[in-house]
Image 1 (cartoon, helix red, strand yellow):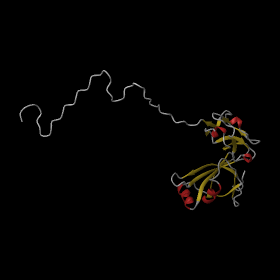
Image 2 (cartoon, rainbow, N blue to C red):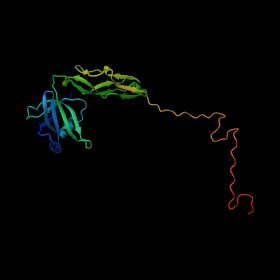
Image 3 (cartoon, helix red, strand yellow):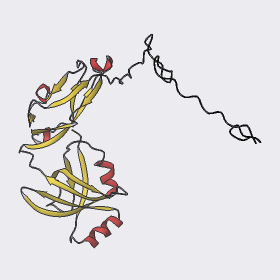
Image 4 (cartoon, helix red, strand yellow):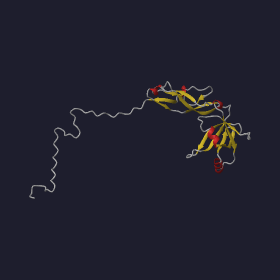
Length: 232
């Protein structure tokens, strides 16, 4: 797992005005918390946060750096939550969770599906059901991702959690019967029934044999003439 370091500063005051001024100055308000510490208000530069943390997937250990504050320096944390502005997507706030490197914890790990399934070659559709799973391990053993080879999957086949190969020391948390990925049959458009002409069948609009003839249309009078047989 890659080593990530982020420089932080301690901050005071939790009012909205303070947070707005921090953001206006190019910083992200954040908190540091954990089972063995009281919640501490900190900040990190927005540029460093975007560069080092926002592109990561899954759970990654992050080392906090603050050379002038021994109580905060060298803390090992996970990024638990990132809040963004709904319109601009600017980072509004972040939560850092301090971990004990000697204690196991539950984290989410992304799944990477590799290979081309036999069922896809036959026209099927690869359908991932889960994109990540929860595992238990030491913080230093968190996998960046888990590979799932789908090459042998035929149409209607599936890979379940029980079939995962996990690194040593990493345990799956959940139902081993969970479906991770499957191959669906190809989508076939429903064909409309063909209309077949049957010999001797009446044609729409044609007179039916034995039916009374339709009355003849009354002749229209000649232009300027009078209807009937009287004298002009």
